[in-house]
Image (cartoon, rainbow, N blue to C red; front, top):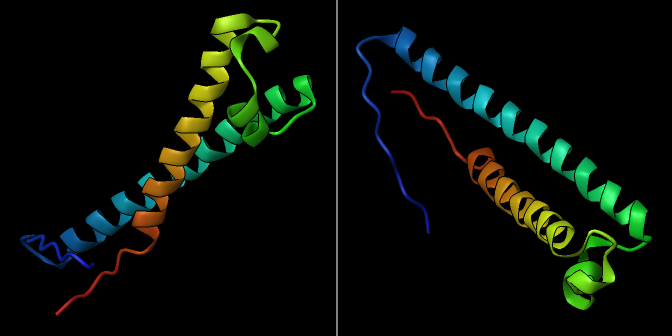
Length: 98
């Protein structure tokens, strides 16, 4: 399902400001995704497993850092999913000018 949103600005320059803000936000999301993937990669390298396997099969007791490390790894995985979903939504946004 598609949803339309209308933003009114006082002049044509305002449209460029809004587009620029959206592009800047998308760039920040991309950087956050890269950083989060790096963090996940560190966990994966430390335990020689994928994040998918970790989430499906492992428990805090399987990790040297116990509960804290489990929460950090699972939190990074959840964060990545959210960041990618948000970026996906913005990547599919269309701009139309009269």
